[in-house]
Image (cartoon, rainbow, N blue to C red; front, top):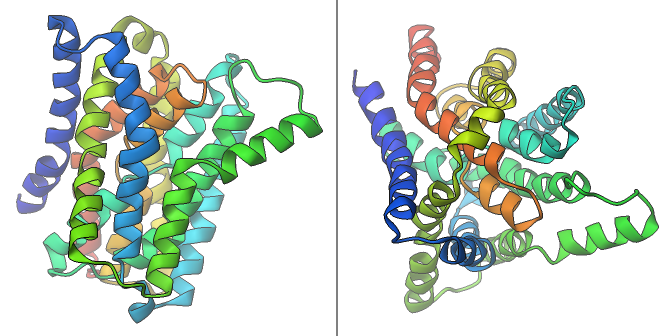
Length: 314
């Protein structure tokens, strides 16, 4: 029951914050112009600050485990490749980009550390999981969203060059790169700077959630319910069912398994919607996937956690 309550406490407030944005739009507190500017602010400032803050302060070098990092990275890539293949089955090719990133991107950085700290009292293996998976999450998300735009041009040298330039200059990628360099070289960070960056980063989740809720179109969402449900099942059930047993067979236990569980089966990150909207996609499917995975992850994560505990793995 405690695990269920924790999961609900971690996910339900996120869902309700999105509902607040939807309500604020209906009563006139948030209009389309404000919503678009909020999305742009989160994408270009708040979200990069959040990623920089998480990675720059992660002491992953002190607990480095090459096998664990390799497993997280390879598993993430495998999920992405499988999702891309599945996305080719949809007749509406304009939703491919949103479907792909929605079905594999987890709230690893935000939920991962909180989940592990709640169980073990420390961040455990979360920093290693973050450094192994989150950069791949974001780099591949930028790549997928760039190449699978709804009105994409013919694939040629100019398009590839433009896409690569967009990836290199993407604020999300720059935030990750700065955080990794800062942590790797153990650069000093004055408390004033840390608190300022943290304050900016804290705006990413609530503001992004409300902007997403404000832009949510119920009619359009129900029109894309099949791909949204498919992505949700992949995100919360299939990846865990396939890759958790492999992790157990490889000998991962305790904090390692919890970190892998969060990487595989936590709700789709809010930034997937923010990035989709800011890279030429409609965002309706992305927001639908975030809402569905957020709502149901409290129950599915609890189930997987209970199963691992029952088997004596954690």
